[in-house]
Image (cartoon, rainbow, N blue to C red):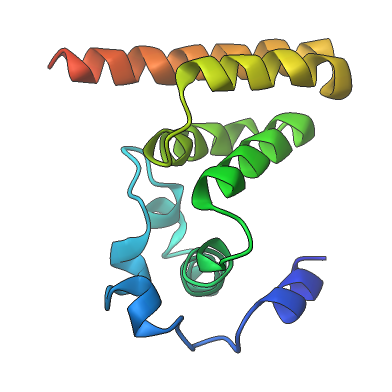
Length: 145
């Protein structure tokens, strides 16, 4: 399915979005860095997957004009919750925060999804979100763990 999505949505691999769209910043610089970066940990093992993540997903798909980055973040966090992809939650909650989604909106999203994705998924998502926001709040106080 990933290949189908890449073939349908993406420019040929190795091309970049227009320079004006990216303000002449490379995808590696453009991608929001997380305090925990699975990409950097996995780059030596799966360099092509990381290249596709940066050059296709973040530099092309996330830059398309059809949805705002805020909307893309809401859709992504929703997909992660409904599919139980907990390892990706931290980095995408960070992206969502940078795209203007508030803690209260994430709380409402999780509550809403409890009725569609299941109670256990919502409770696990709430735990992951609490851990993320606790770290974020600690960092704002200068006491980052």
